[in-house]
Image (cartoon, rainbow, N blue to C red; front, side, top):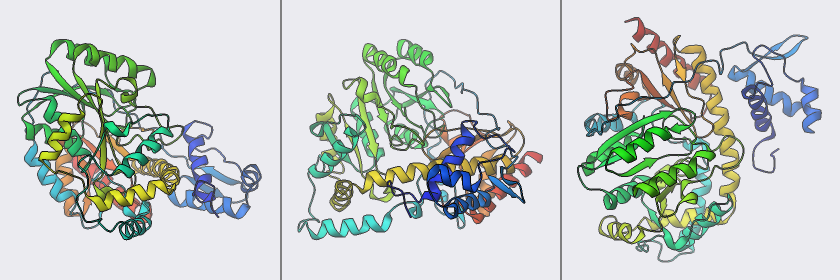
Length: 476
């Protein structure tokens, strides 16, 4: 039996219990509501509640005590401290880790057992078969499906994206939109028209290594700014950088950034866009995780606050179809030059994948999928957080993202996660070592973990093994 949003009722009950833990309504070691009490409150069957509790017990969150009921396991869940705000050098740096990133790109996808490395959802968590049916249907209805698409993108898809964004109160004009081959192409196009070799671009620190790859390819320097794991990029450091340095652009992820998972407060967003308007620099807003809040409404965008100073980028890669490579960008001011660069490189974006996504969005299934997937991400992040608190070394710090499916871990300072990564790879376990998330010599004791994999005993076993490798590395 499912709820109206497509979730199984027992999954919703799990999320309710985990949310009570997060908000402090349930304390470690405390008793949770009985089967009958929960069933009456939620107007469902005791059998459904029991299934939810059994699943939570299997994951290690609760335990059954004979004649006493169910209790929250007395664990360190949520007690691991968060990392402090980062403090990179305020000097623009050339990007010099390209070869290392390329090596990791190759090996991260080659782990034979499990990979927590690549920031993409497992296909088992996505409606892959259903989307394939949509593609087959769309292609059958479009005789010229193998033809070139218009450079700006499939009009039907742009309309559906605009409708989807409008449902969250975000106006995204289709005549200012370009469909691109993934978010990376969109960011490349934006940087290509805004900068020249030797220029400096602001990035959060740590930042997604895909950005530094692009900066390297274009000969651009990375100006890393302090970033807080909860509130994001430091406003005062940003203000100083815009006044002090000849900055042309910044790449900012305001919503659940990769890798920290931070969320820029709504109250800061107008102030940030005002800074850029006054300086003349441009924000490239990467909103690739914006559709994945763990609770509540979808957060806003910087693009809403200033359409002149912001180039907006988002994608379907993190929500439904990583391999389709379909993204979009919007700009009031820079559309024409980006259009020209798109025409001179990839020309257009693959038509069949656009047709399939347009069909899927038009069916209303994307909205229902997102509701379910958001809950899945929240549950998985909680499961990983719980396991990491049990299996990783004393002194480990961990982020507490309110959206997305990524965790950033900071081990004790003596840890070398690149060396741990190499050992783990030999055992078929992957993760992303912290050093690749900076142009500077930083985050060598950190790692990024992708939680968007199916959680089961095997997943926990490999995460436990990774924790053991961290213990061994710290002992020398």
